[in-house]
Image (cartoon, rainbow, N blue to C red; front, side, top):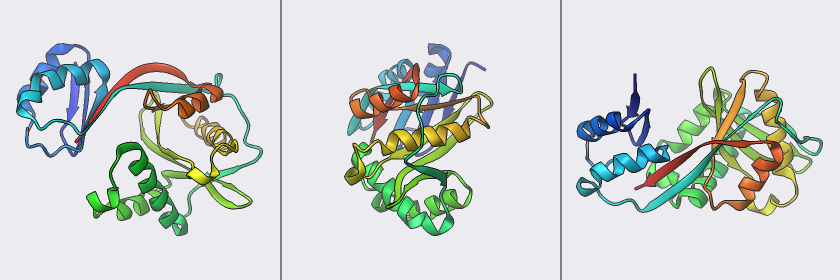
Length: 220
């Protein structure tokens, strides 16, 4: 196997070299139905160069998204001001509201309008234990989803601190606590972030994340 492509509303690419990308471009169902194309930067650039003349242009381009990773030895921090736990089913509406707010801020669209099934999917993910929260004396203050995983890593997604609670150290404490728990089950944790998101990059650097690759995303 030299490459993998998932053709869905979110198209995901991975390839060892350019040859699989050529094949994916020939097979791609170019119906302009993707919401995004994502993968390693070089792979996405090669794929888009092959299909862009037959495809609607992206509305947003996230050209450089550092892929970061942390393991038990490199994790730094403390969680003394925040309690972390899996979200409870009764909290799914708060999780859905804040997940939608994160997507609006990061991707520029409202998923509750674009995807009628959004709330149901979030509730199902909460029931399955995929969503984690940070909690302090005032209530829920941080949200994070445990996403796809392999024997090598688990990807963290949906990382979000409500705007009114930022710059208090809550994200650092909650992220550390969640990572500390999840690293008991996974050898590494990974995530990717926009290169222009300086506060997020500083947060992950404080926690001990280091760059392991680079992604790129086209949003439609």
